[in-house]
Length: 369
Ligand code: G6P
Image 1 (cartoon, protein in one colour):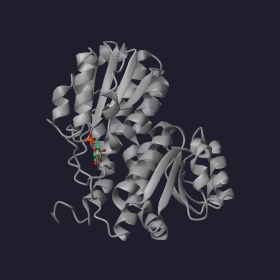
Image 2: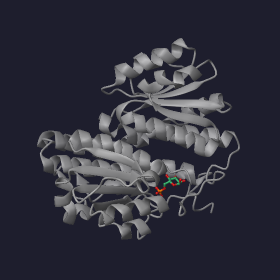
Image 3: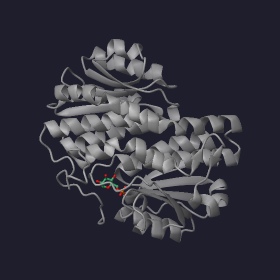
Image 4: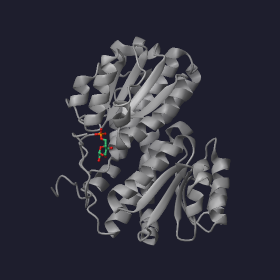
């Protein structure tokens, strides 16, 4: 097992550090920005269905559902198709309105999640086209779907998903770019520029990992808190959900993710000097709005820890701690911004003496409903 961990103390840490490679593996052979090439083999026979879909329905559970939320923003922005993101466990039991014009994307690391499988069977019985985005080759979901793309992240052993999440977003980003280009909603020059941006992500994740020591220091300061809030807007809202999920899964600290603006409809009541609030505050179209949300937290004496873009000065001036990540196009920011949050949860959990790779009560693959 020590050999399998490749020198890391836990699989989770190894898998966090594998991300520059796992994302590159996921893009390899599919995307070549220089020649403008973007090919997803699994889509070939279903491109017509995809392109003419009146609606995309994404179904998944847990972290995979968070990847689906990122995809909702991607598909709507680039391809202008309406998207719904559904918890598989809800979708399967609520007699959803769905038919032949719907293109369903089922996301699953393991490819074995019972609720996701059942949601697929239901959508299939109503005539929808089902596309799988899975990591485990030959698992049940790829066999139950019409077509799909593997994430090629390699085996993920840690129960808390890390590299599978970023690989899922990578596949979904390629799908959104392809769809936007084919549908004509993404002009060629912008499409090519975005291909370059996506291709640069593995290198940026590599740079984000360099903050590990600084993150350890922050973890030391907050390891004994009882609650935490994670806030973000736009593409970074699902990152806030994922950051909170990572913390609660492995460190057993109660954490909630929220869209930053929703804070005033509830979570703001919880803020006092004891409450750490983790903001994803990268330079994007909602940056100024996030800065005001940070000010609202500081005005109530909350502690602010913010993931910011390299060179940021505005948030740095008001936050208690900042973690810098390289600048990216906002649509791909989740791929980089989630990394420091994964590291932070990891260190906090280790410092609390938790079993990071196998947290209590959780399973890697949930094959019962
Ligand atoms: C379990 C795992 C999570 C995972 C979720 C969905 O809860 O512990 O890490 O996100 O199932 O699993 P899937 O294999 O379908 O992505």
